[in-house]
Length: 437
Ligand SMILES: Cc1ncc(COP(=O)(O)O)c(C=O)c1O
Image (cartoon, rainbow, N blue to C red):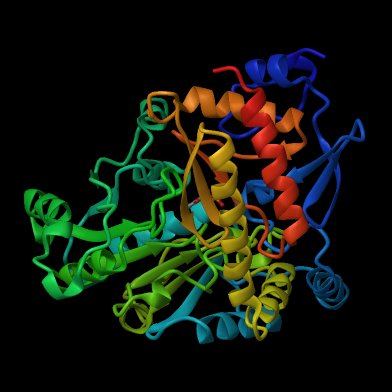
């Protein structure tokens, strides 16, 4: 089959190279627990839980049953320009808000993380328009950030190649250096850690900046931002009337062994973006959760449309039913501590493996969002190309992974068993051993 006979066009993928290198028959036909099966009958351990979103494995019966029940009761619905929201969506919004820190209480639903990061930035700008602060346009994001695609989400994402080929790109976006890697000492805080952000704000002019968006754990480097850095950032933004927006599309919904990363902070951002694991990947579901004061300020805008942002399938009842079932699982006694325990076991296995395979380095990350450093004989981190090639060798060894610069991302589902962790590490070590850089 040539590239022109293959009908599906994958996102962010040069299709010709993909088909030449991988062939056209890699499609998946089944999944159960941690494993997926392709059309040729090959079985893989999915260490990337599809696109980091299948957080409860491929056979989560309670979620499937809740979706099937909802399909029978009310199979479709919307919260877009419509006065009859599905009851299950209203219930889900309340249940979701109830497990998040105050004052994050109002939920806009969507289908993708990109849609919601973009909505967050647009909502911040809309708020300014309504408040008469029309100069406040600029959104600040961190270097190495991934916030999705779409004109504004692409601009917020720090991937120059995406900017080069996605013109016109939003001009009012500024990127600042990534957070420090060292955990700061709150008692000795001089505010130094957030200086690059403050300098960027000053360079633009504080009254021209509307929001700062951040990922608490970088999905590129897998380095968690120190909690004190994030707290200082939120406080400094608040002091200047700038919205803080946490993008927890990957880290939220249990991935870091908690509902959200921000719940460990002493400060709460103005907006929170969730996606991926909200539905355990069983339905396209994402959410933007907004603080009370922002919602209240915009409840009766002088614009008849309200905030002009939304899509047909926002608040879809099947998504809400999946979300409620996932929430039940995440909030069950002992569930999240078990994720942390399993993450510690997996980390320990990887550290043990690094003793016998010198190319395996330190393990970064949080919960079930791990990045394993890969180092050459001189101790240098591998290039993106080498990690991407290793990913192919991993697949030949029955292991599906993502790839990043110098680190191999490992994001299996949250309920992976100890045996499956062992299998994951064995396959990974064999693949690293077989890889010729
Ligand atoms: C932190 C973060 N934000 C936003 C997105 C975009 O989400 P989606 O792919 O659902 O549009 C992603 C996806 O990987 C992400 O990791």
